[in-house]
Image (cartoon, rainbow over all chains, first blue to last red; front, top):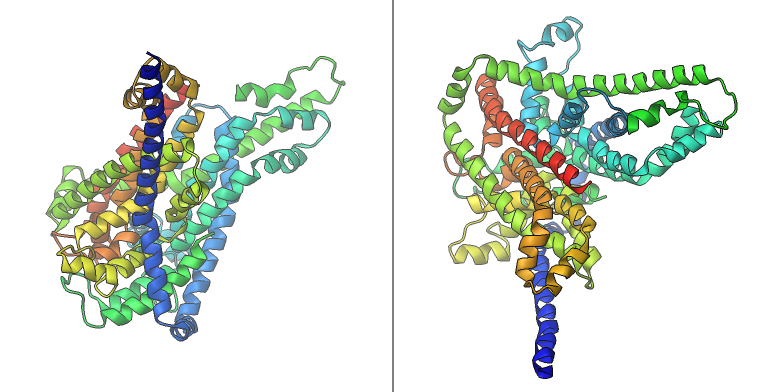
Length: 279
Length: 294
């Protein structure tokens, strides 16, 4: 009897180890093959060309312009979507009115809609025959193929990030601290700055990080609205896409000639983008 | 609850000083309407308006829009390919993503935090760079790509490459949807099941899984929606061969660049309709999930 009890327990702990080890190994293997291997691949491709190709590529005026443009779009997007995102988060977490749940469904919508569709939306609004096209063209304001539409589509895509990070923090927080502050005589603005903002800062920062990463990397929507005019409306990602496209026309089964050169150039560009993209 | 707390200053507080109560009420109301108005205006202009336009323009012409979408050369194949690949992506990542979340939450092993950080990397990398990375790794000039090529496995300019790109991009969506639910789970219930003689597998199936289901389904649907619309990671890897590796988002950009915005809008509307239904389903599931846990 005692041996019968002991044997399963021993083999039980051995089995436990086996199961834990097995599951951990599967998890590490999956992430390794899917995520880590391509990272190593790009590092290998980027370093193979040597540093001279790096500096040569990065000193081209078009490339510099592309990076500056990406920076401008990202900065505007981050500022607007953080400030207004906190406002929306406050309303979603604290306010109650009919249609509030519909509102939070709309907040999530950009996560599910393809960036390409977002670009098409902008074309339908501001393009020829679009709802707003007469108004803006009468005033000589260029929206499509210019900065405004590029910022607008990037903002659309980045709206959910700050809101989704801040809302749960606000819900968990409750309002007792804020009430205490206002009871002690703080103005609502003081309460917001000293209590609310301080409490949500980590969630807000993570949301901003996600927004920045996404804004830097956005391509589908920007490709459609910008027209990717080199030196004018070409962002960093659009430059990389062009670097690939020039030497390889889509629709070919076999990699075209010059593939090797593109691979090197694109690899370097991309490696640089990666450094910028990782927060 | 929150409506009350927002209005609380208007309720006379016991023991409180005789402050300028009515003024506070007016200011609170102003602040509330200011916030509410700003939020509604922002979301209304940025999200609702463009959505309404797509729906009005796309579905306004009724069935003919769908006929246009499906008669555009290559569109039918592109949409079928996109939906199938997105579904396969969601299924694979639901299995491995849930397993990863479980390992990350429940097991302690060296490198656990590193693994957790690596899972977030796809969020931080521009999606186009994902495509570049895959080409660097599996392209014909890399050792790995050459090796696979010799064994007859083509990754780049093939559906396998698209699948890898989609799996990469959507992995964190599933893990981050399941993880919080797992963190909140009470482990004593599992222990009770085990003590009562249930096997590991039975415990997982009957005790853990039912609680995780809303998170898993939500994560899977998010992954599916994201995979349906992915452009950056796919465009470089796929080679965009009509009828073979051309996905719907890439087709839409080609139509726009080719000066056919009407055809692009038709295909976009179809894709949009699919995503929109998915969001509604996810929202409903998350809501029921929250109700169950609270």
